[in-house]
Length: 97
Image (cartoon, rainbow, N blue to C red; front, side, top):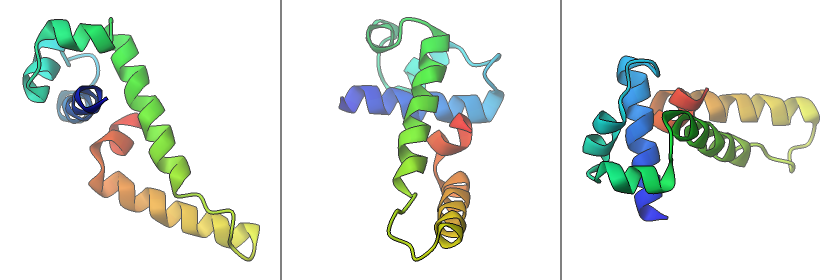
């Protein structure tokens, strides 16, 4: 799972840097420090890689949603703040959204 996470982080950085269309599997593999074969083992296509980034982004953003706040409005405010912060600091969240 560690290698898969490295690949997702590298893909997110590349998607942010040059966009999905211009991102290449070779560039993601180089950024992640893995072979293209290793990357294809986890993600057979660039689309599956992008969907992997989106899935991980969903996991990370849903983790900031609290169900313990006093009101639904407070929960929404806190979740919005948490996600906004992650957009600024987490390449997977930024690229996924």
